[in-house]
Length: 314
Ligand code: NAD
Image (cartoon, rainbow, N blue to C red; front, side, top):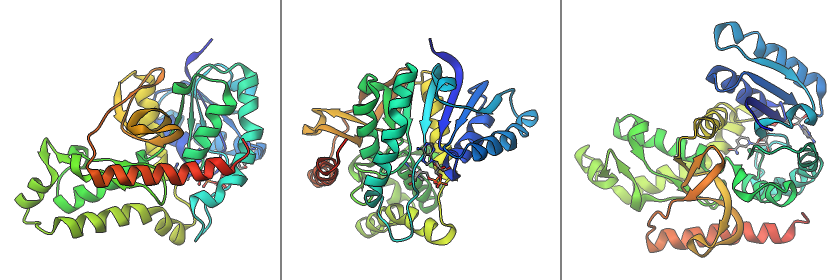
């Protein structure tokens, strides 16, 4: 049985607590379970966030365990060691796969039947691990993937072009990490091809600007971590957006990470491509046209992930 008004969050550090705070304000759920190996931390966050409920929407928020999460509609997993300054997301792999080996089997044993949303890094590898360990249908296991990177891209393009970022349609695809790439060939602002829109605003040096913005997007996490030691607000809003798409059965296109089954010639890896997301999780991938260069970048990103997956003992 799935309780459509219940969410659980595993890992109540910066990302888990910010996501809980964003979800409390969303009104999507009336019950929220917070789980952490540090039980006191989960209890403290539950109390603190609950004290904001009178200003938002009724929601019962409490620290619990996996039995409490068994009937949740969504479990968001943010547990794990965080990226340290100078450390790549892929450096984290063995540490966090080990943590997943203690978490995912407990979710499986609880009989959970909802959607599992993986946020911990490296998110593509851990999404793949969760697909293998959870026993859930593969479409019900989603990684936050490049949803955050795509938000950063839209924000930066919105600033550059003086337009609402919500009117920018452009995606970061591939690994959430160093091998990700911006799919410029399909980028549009309100149906106008990006380069045409740029020309209208007096921006003509497309290649240099694209390279600069893609680099800034890729380095955002490193810059924020160097300055404040963690990133959490942007990802919390991304979690809220993905949960909204699921709970409202929106069939929204989001670049979540999910298992590839032959799309773009990719198999047996989780990676981010524009995907229709609805009540059951992944509905289908959208076959976005890629230029030859972008296709090469996608293959490179997939190979980088595959090389890691092949080294990990799931
Ligand atoms: P954090 O150290 O603040 O919090 C991690 C929490 O996980 C801690 O409270 C810890 O007690 C808990 N935890 C550890 N092992 C656990 C276990 N076995 N069971 C339950 N809880 C456990 O870290 P953070 O800044 O919140 O980051 C969490 C993760 O999110 C990291 O892997 C980070 O890289 C990732 N992250 C992902 C994105 C993204 O876009 N996907 C963005 C930001 C951060």
